[in-house]
Length: 224
Image (cartoon, rainbow, N blue to C red; front, side):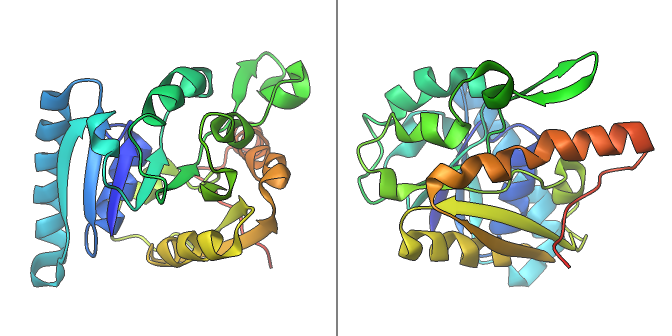
């Protein structure tokens, strides 16, 4: 598959690229194409050294909007505040068959801890806001919110964690579940329709508050 990652030069983008390039064609995006290309070359060196002759895919770089053409899956590794601006532009170039994945968490830091913006300010969830910008809501999936960025980038690590997925079309959800399962130790758990995405998104500020106040390092979540 061809997978694009908008904001792919950040930590989560790095982790996804390194994990999935073993089997897929990955295109990471940045506002600066030259930066994306340079970072992609670095990812390739790391991946080739790790996977060696088992590597079947590759990593390349492009700007955030040109990469969206002719993709099977598009990962939005962007801030909540930029969703409308970024997605309104992406919607003009992305294929109708492309699956759009939101790992975005609307949260902020306050003195009392990390808070979830939709609850605190009455705003929409990230996935609902993403869906507002594309023609087909059924192609939008919410996933990958509670994964430790630090652990994801260390491709030799088994994550031993769950990722919680929401989406309206079960066939689309199934494709993301299969992609999730390619990451060592990551188990996909389906929560329900896209309207249930708040249940997945709100887990991240909860997890970060627990980690900060109890001195836990890079925790994940798993249903047992």
